Length: 71
Image (cartoon, rainbow, N blue to C red; front, side):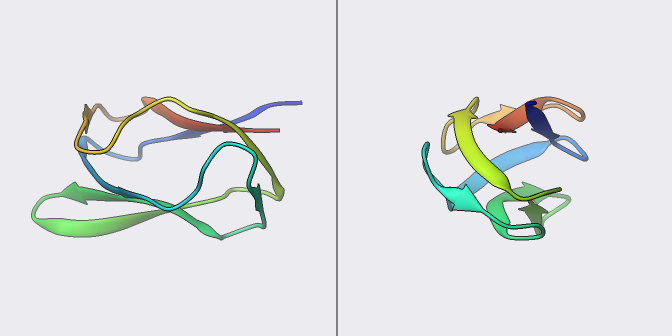
């Protein structure tokens, strides 16, 4: 079962803290988005393994855009 981690708001990807294959736990920090001149951490919604990262460093993302897929 895949879990899609989506952006809560429009912003710019400042930092990606995981890579494909990493195991993450609930509420581990996955990446940082800059929105409204603030750094907004994106947390894992569940335990899992990173199977896909759908954005790159510096990318501008829209609200609800899928950022990371966990399995």
